[in-house]
View 1 (cartoon, rainbow over the protein chains, first blue to last red):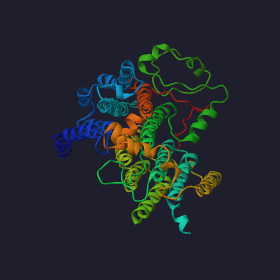
View 2 (view 1 turned 90 degrees about the vertical axis):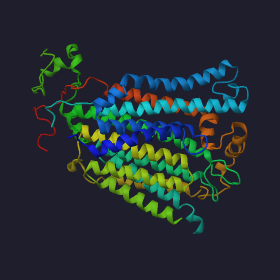
View 3 (view 1 turned 120 degrees about the vertical axis):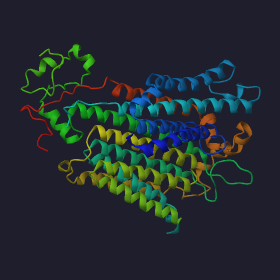
Length: 143
Length: 159
Length: 191
């Protein structure tokens, strides 16, 4: 008999919805409460829920730790790249107004990319830290 | 007296801050300290957010027909503060796991006893990964002078 | 106002219970409840973004990480190290009294004439729909007007991840070597 049948069945329904909700919060951060950090935490919580329900080994095969570590750096790099791109286009560091043909569109583009970077980093960080805590095994001689 | 009623919010937040501070400085258990630090941080965030509230205002999301908004600047600063709080909490908990592995306890007083029982000049036997066992830490040579038994099989086999 | 008072009473009760409990599992659960109650208080105070973040982070991530730490360490606090410490209580009461004295000069709660509302906030509130064009003023301030702070915040969370990877990223099955007292006993032997 499979252990935790009911939580797993419910989890299979809910985890995609949690991730979809995280994407919703990420991209609707402009119009309501939300933004990069909240979305990253919710996505990370979805990954943690998957690891809790289906076991750490299976979760590590789906979300490989090496790939998560790449994503941690990717988000920070994305943020910095937006700033550098603004400098290359003639403005100051992180001045989004010069990124597009029109300052308002430039701000929209800049905020979108920046929040995406924050969301990617935070989701990967939460998942990585949880995998590290859960995978820290101790000696059998431990009490 | 009526003007003091507007200060009740700040006083309650100060009470919560002091409960958190008392937990940090007086409890010996390291996990309790981290929980107390979390309570302290949330109370400080409450303090700043309550300074940003404007009477008759609403959430700082622009909508047609609303004139008064609460101040968005403390909210922004407190978002960063929450991020920093969770970062330090995660790191502190990682340190606590390693301290437990190195000392066998997470009570601050017991760690102090272990440190003083070794006497002046005693060294901590570091936690070693089995992959690094061949490196042979420098504490190995001093372990012989102590009449202590090893906790597990000595993978290095040096002593 | 009634909502504020009820929430404050609950928050204070939960905080005192967290201090007094010896079972760490219950203390961690109460800390999660504390975060949720404070998220409710933030919503009542019109800070919806902060409430969202605090609920997700405090009741989600912090609780999970603390439970993970409890699974890797101990589950109860040791009572023999909990003697009453009057000096700590005195220091805390003195600090609290000084802080209360400091708040006597502060603007009252909700006062629209407070200095905090007169410097940058009107500029942000008025110019944000025009210059940036997104309704959420907190996001526009966070990502655009104060983008440097958010850049630093992202770097902070990146650094915390690196720190935890360095601490806990070693190979599993780490051999433990304990510091022994000079008579060969472990500190927790007779407990």
